[in-house]
Image (cartoon, rainbow, N blue to C red; front, side):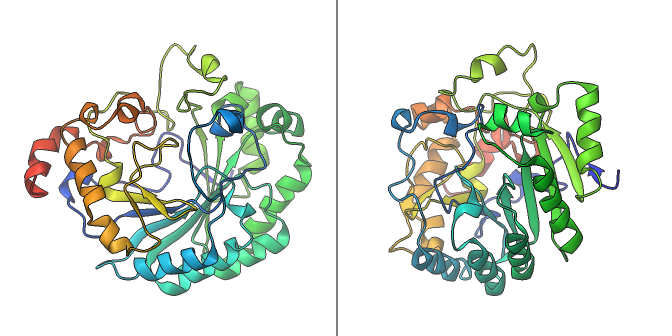
Length: 339
């Protein structure tokens, strides 16, 4: 196998102690949520919940080019470059008609050190691959849902030509320039040693890095959670011991821009609150504004002091790396932020 196996390690590389770097005048991560739509209905995902039973996500399902372009202009105004601009959110980013144009605009702006997409890969036809490569995409993350067409139909309720799917991934790998590829799969899709070996045999030579991630019960209303909760030991998505954190760090280093221009301070599906709106406000002002400031102040006192959504949320508990846990530094950080 040519690919580097990174199961149990940070997929993006070695992490620094976050608390030592705070406060930040420039976010490390800006996540664009370009489209609230997906062609998959994975049984462990939010999209498995019937739409009429979901809580509020966004007023507009598709981000306009005008709003996106304005956001990129804003991001170039931060004192430093954004470390990573990521296209993902609760949907399949390759469904957005302007996704290649968005990647190229982001790269040409120089706003970020790295531009990446997290995708299910099903729309990665040759013309899409050529466009993303030519646009200068830095990192492509493909979330795999099985090692056969039958598994894809079972897990994602999607009929896929599996051989064509693998060939399309191979095409991207063989034609890419500087793009780094990471292929990952959830452990429930490859439960046996034989399955895991077949996974490596199929994909191990057509990617740069490869991993197996743990399916975790982060979407409370998803019926399949009952199966996931039967595990005898809870681990994080990355296979590390899971613990409940006191202070969620996401709003201290990242922000997500939703399709309607609302800005949130975390990657939770149901937000504790909308922190701001960038339709008529600079993202620099949003990052330093009252919404983020108030939220950070409350969070440093412990998530139980923020709202019920934060109390109930398990997303970051299941995705935490030790370097990101700022709980033990809360009092010191409150002083640095002037709280």
